[in-house]
Amino acid sequence: AIEMTQSPSSLSASVGDRVTITCRSSQGIRNNLGWYQQKPGKAPNFLMYGGSSLQSGVSSRFSGSGSGTDFTLTINNLQPEDFATYYCLQDHSFPLTFGGGTKLEIK
Amino acid sequence: EVQLVESGGGLVQPGGSLRLSCVASGFTFSDHYSDWVRQAPGKGLEWIGRTRNKPNSYTTEYAASVEGRFTISRDDSKNSLYLQMDSLKTEDTAMYYCASYDTNGYPMGYWGQGTLVTVSS
Image (cartoon, one colour):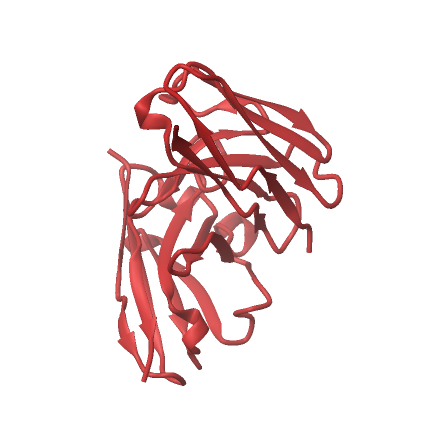
């Protein structure tokens, strides 16, 4: 199975900051990667796919990049509603695998 | 408005069975692949299985942790996705989410709110 490693596992930041979350796959997955946001007690919410294709309705403060084995999710000008846990998902091959998550907390 | 609504969760004893349902609305459910994902209390997300659509013969894929115990099916006439869970173990305790590809063709673009399964004696 492809292992997805997210870093950091937790992150403290302030409103207005820019943060970057990294996801690394144990083997190449081309651009078959999605990013999901989950708030406490809620279902995950799809943000983007293919490293950079933003879901409609998602703020342009979110951006992504990467291909192959290394991917990043960047959030510019953090807003209070952005504090959540973020997961990457590879759907390049079965079994599909999620990263361990990055919990973004308010400093 | 797109909605996925799960039901069927509850308390079950180890070794028991449970069937979860997920009803979709607001998009053409039959066009898309669908998945089940679970989250144990305080833990991360775990993909457990996928069903493809009719053009792809409704074929399924499973995680090793549930292969042979869980069965995914769908009834496109009812816009419904199902998860039959047999031989349940305490480690199957989790919130179970259904998710579908969205109209842009992205995996797990739509999610339900989840249904809680507790396996305990």
